[in-house]
Length: 106
Image 1 (tube, helix red, strand yellow):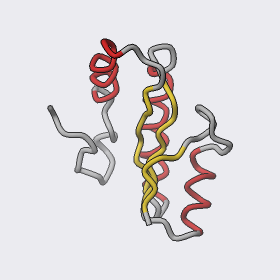
Image 2 (cartoon, helix red, strand yellow):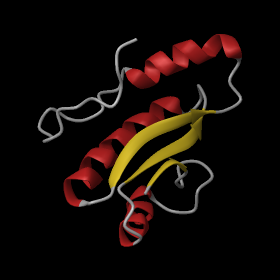
Image 3 (cartoon, rainbow, N blue to C red):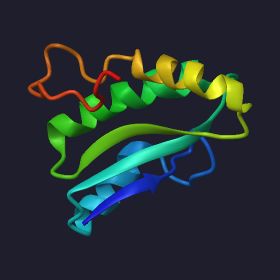
Image 4 (cartoon, rainbow, N blue to C red):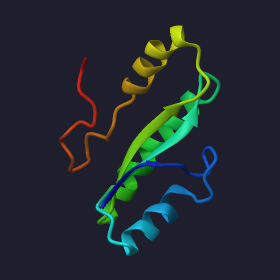
């Protein structure tokens, strides 16, 4: 099973990302996307942290963490700018064994 919409304590979830993934691993989930709420005020904090924690967790867990974001209460004219900001974050460090990017260039 795969869950593509979970939240952590970075927004309105109850668990830190590693505990959420640990629990899903016990339930034999293959992957989980943590898509915490963000807007222009916290995007620069949440996205890099989630990308970093995903790289670390994915080295050690059978359940893979897909870093994502849920843009919340954002003016329509800002959405494309904020999406570009999110996509500009490197999804995995070059030293990672993963060579497949999580986003495609548009």
